[in-house]
Length: 113
Image (cartoon, one colour):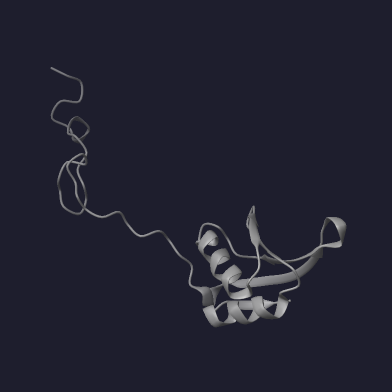
């Protein structure tokens, strides 16, 4: 006789939705957690980089509640400029403050700066 025989710890884990074994479960994964844009505030600023180049920086959006790479792609397409994601900051090449502000407001974000 095993130590946990007949207890819930002895049974293999099952899916909570379909009650199949976890290895046999075909349920789709839960969608990732997203914070609605109306509940977030993006802070915009322009910063100077090496050799006098300027970038528009977007701060205040958390990586856990947003799809930052997809958001960056949409903003870059709208501005027609390059950009990158550093930590949780989105950087767009050039002084794109007005275009970025307009784009974020159309998406539903609150904007400061």
